[in-house]
Amino acid sequence: MDNACTDLAASEEEDTEVFCLMRVGKSSDWLRLFENSEVTIGRGADVTYQLLSPSCPLMISRLHCSFKQREDGQWTVTDRKSLNGVWVNHCRLAAEKAHLIMPGDSIQLGVAVTGNDVEFDYTLVHRPLKDIKSVLAKPYSDTGTKAAHIFKKPKRKMTEEMEPSTSSKPKLYRCSGTDKSTARSCPLPPTEAQQHLYCPSRFSQNILMLREQVDSTERQVASLESQPRQNTHLREEQVRELQNQLEMLRAKMDKMKTLEKSFNKAKRQLEVRQLFKTQQQEEHLKKQLEDALQEQKKVIDELAMSRQGFEEMLLAKNKELELTKEEKEKARAQKEEVVTQVTEVLENELQCIICSELFIEAVILNCAHGFCRHCIQQWRKKKDECPICRQAIQSQTRCLALDNCIDRMVENLSLEMKTRREELVNERKGERCVCQLYFNYEFKIRISWKHKFSFICSLKTCTKA
Image (cartoon, rainbow, N blue to C red; front, side):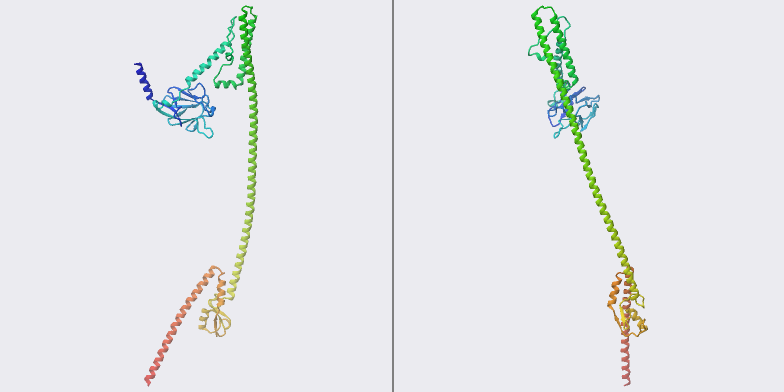
């Protein structure tokens, strides 16, 4: 009946879902989080799971972190002042502050070594126990407890053996050549041994304790020698054992003194080395600072030279611009002066006296005076004499050279004068066309009347005949 209940309970336990830390990239060493208990992780001996890094032994602290379940069933993780920290979803946690974690969260213990990924990388999962039972890591707490008991027993025995007896007959212990190691200090766990080895106060305490033990042993030897000489053989054996123990204690005390001296020497060397390294770092930083200042000064000088060059170029460009402006002003003034002179020449010498405009299709009379072709034709309809000198007009000649000269000179005048000139030319051409049509029409009428008159005359002649 009991076996059936046990099997039923075991099957129910395997069917239950538990929280565990799944090792990323590995199908082993998963860490189960036990309900209603605090799960501790580190490299010390008094933790639930002991993690040791082969590549970097100090990556995990002695007590690195702890996991604890709240009353509502959710889990929290706390960083126990670890050296390399606890990272949840790639964010480092503050020390001694519980942080809520959920299934699927990434939990990293320590940091990544150069060129490698994080060694202890986990993900919180919630799965049935039967599915992950084969990949779970065994807790280290039981082993650590046993180890602690093993270490404590020799220490207690050592203390009892080294305490002097208050009775008249001191209790002595036998120690063979192979058991002389028991006279040494109690073996400690690696972490505690390192604390003893690297703590100067522990050296002093051990030396004082050994001196007390030496004094106690010497008092025991003196008390034995002062006793009445009875059982000489037994007393000599006791004295010999006490002397052996005394020699062992003195050798141990000398060794502790040597270790203390070595430690102090190494400490001084380390301090000197650190001081030298600090000085080297300061000199290196000072040199880097000086190099940076020199580089900055060089860049500033280059910028100043570039600025000076640009300023000189800008001044030269400004001077060129001023000169160009002056030249343009001079050219414009000269052009205006030329235009003014040309305009005066045109108005004074090349202007028709009849229409008061520049010659349009200029003609020269036999008296050498010039006029517009249209103007002189209209004038001759009234009077056949020169408007200027009143000399009879015998001939008129077109002057193409004068027309071309006027056209070229008008090109340098203002736009307004050019437009006016074109309008006048077009107007004169239109008037000429009208006059030509009228002349042709008049000529045809004259011819027609001439023919009619001839026909009438011939008709009258025939009638008379």
